[in-house]
Amino acid sequence: MTVLYEIAADLPTRERIIPVSVLRPKVWEGFKDSLTDAQRNFAKARGFSAEAGQRLRLPNAEGETDHVLFGCGPEDKDDMGAMRLGSLGGSLPEGHYQLVNLPVEFSPRLAAIAWGMGSYKFTEYLNDEITPPTLVLEDDVDLIEIKAAVEATALCRDLINMPAGDMGPVALEAAARGLAEEFEAEVTSVVGEDLLSENYPMIHAVGRAAHEAPRLVEFIWGNPDHPRLALIGKGITFDTGGVNMKSASGARLMKKDMGGAAHALALSRMIMATNLPIHLHCLIAVAENAVSAGAYRPGDILRSREGLTVEIDNTDAEGRLVLGDALCKAAEAEPALMIDFATLTGAARVALGPHLPPFFSNREAPVSAVMHQASREGDPIWHMPLWQPYNSMLSSPIADMKNAGGAFAGSVTAALFLERFVKGRPWMHFDTYGWNPAARPSHPKGGDMYGVRALYAWLKSGGLNGGFSA
Image (cartoon, rainbow, N blue to C red):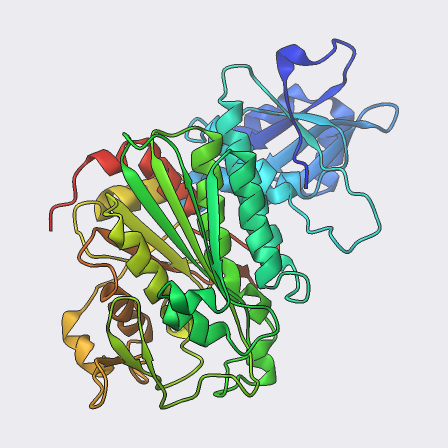
């Protein structure tokens, strides 16, 4: 999807720009005096009072839209801030618009990002051409960063929204390669039986039953003198649950089980597009968890790249297996920080719902700063504990560990499982849903991105330079 922005100074003087006034109820009371009598009466007849989410297009004498009014409600009841403006980008017709009268607490940069995020539509299988409205910006904004955020969001959503029939292991590798080549990164992959010879046995085991071979896709970008950041994504392109097969309702959205890979690629895109001083290593563990004669089974014991043996308690706990091998590979290069993304556990959704992804960190130092940026960017996340006593839930009498910890604390035990593969390196784990069940401002229904903009802001602010003491 192309999201359109224009700089005001670059537009022809004849171009008609429609102002969009962003108003709180108290401001509206005084603002309406600046309208014509006809417009004021029109607004009154339509019941516009600047309550949160209200939109109204005011016509001129010729019946064309002359002005757009948008309400964001009282400040003390506003829990969305500038992100609420995303409902404008998704609802206004084609044309040039400019935000005016923004509340002083709204960031123009964040308002522009929200506009673009809200303009998103997944059009791959639609015959109708959709042209989003164009937002006109002043020349003092960082258009490169705004576009980077919106394009990364669109990339993440597009990858998740694609059906598994068109986004299998081969296609996901192609998407990762395309991104790497766009920014001249060095890309490699290990595919199929080569995973065994190259020592990625858990990735191989999870994907060996599918008709498209499993693989580990990696790319490296940036100056080696800069701090090394490893981004790792779970790329399960469809999850049947394996032999422990999911129900029909449970399988319905499993095209999104590669959402962790989509998040890792999206953050990689933002880093590369804005040329952050980071030595980036992106690893995508790709497989389809299918059922056939070659499928791995409950009770099997798998060896891992780390050398640990894993008893399979449940074949539907496959994401942590492919991530384990990928995390181990990333840790071998001793990065300053590792961050993994995965649509990993239903327990995280039960605990925090679809819009608030938990994250875990084996270092306390960065947690408050990351949380601060999440709040500032309107991209909420929530810190959860790596509660070490729960490691006992992963105990196995015949292997070093099991791959699932039972009914309790599912997101915590999954994170504890992953922690065993990071070799003590600084690490964060994001258990993201990757899906928005119902449309809301800046977030259309469907595949969605969580936490990436917050992490980007933290990285841009020098997050990798702060040190990660235990």
